[in-house]
Amino acid sequence: MMSNLDRISARRDVRRAASLLAAPLLWLLGIYIGALAILFLTSFYTVDSFTNQVIHEFTFQNFIDVFTDHAYLNATLRTLGVAVSVTLVCAFLAIPMAFYMARIASPARRPFLVALVLTPLWASYLVKVYSWRTMLTPESGVIAWLLHPFDVQSPGYGIVGVIITLSYLWLPYMVLPIYSGLERLPSSLLDASADLGASTLQTMRDVVLPNVKPAVIAGSVFTFSLSLGDYITVQIVGGKNQMLGNVVYQNFSLNLPFAAAVASIPVVIMVVYLAMIRRTGALENL
Image (cartoon, rainbow, N blue to C red; front, side, top):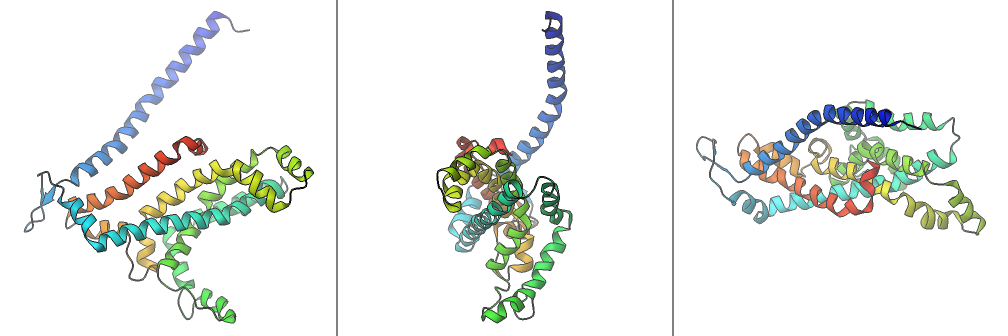
């Protein structure tokens, strides 16, 4: 048993470690929250139409322009639709992949499979996006060649191409949390389901999915937020479509307050999304 001196020493060590970590943590939080506060504050300023200099006069005009102009409203809805679609596609692909890795593959093969999932993250972002641009070429791309025997056209460049490309880019961020959640799933639950005569689909629906739901939601935080802020992919494979990131990119050097107002929209969406999933316990899986 620990003596009183040992307990006092342990408490002292814990307090010392906490004090050492507090300063860097507060510094990081200050930079992050401070940057967001400055961004939000800038969105209420305006610019001089002649010099493009920021004028520190409080106005709601930037937000009025964003929410009354159909082009910006369409960009907002398009961005939100892409983020939701990418998240659903990643979840649909990641659940069976992670289930095979965690519950079917032998323990000796699991590290190798995890490495295969992580391998695409080592490649350059632009290399992967331009690779998909080549594959999505409407008439001569790999996708068109694969779909030709079925008399189906390639999706080409557009929103479908953006969803496909982003799903490929962010899929590992969905697979890994689900894999981690499935590893913690007790085997006794699967055995009990089989003993009670449940089919594979019934086991997946009634046993696996409810238990892995927090991990899916945790993975969706990554796929949803990364898709929400992406703007390079849509420039390369999106054709003439634009997302909120493109609007910010095009305006930050010409009208910084308006760009800040547009950039605030994904931040607000993510705050609302995180608030919605806060009570599910999914954030503990991050």
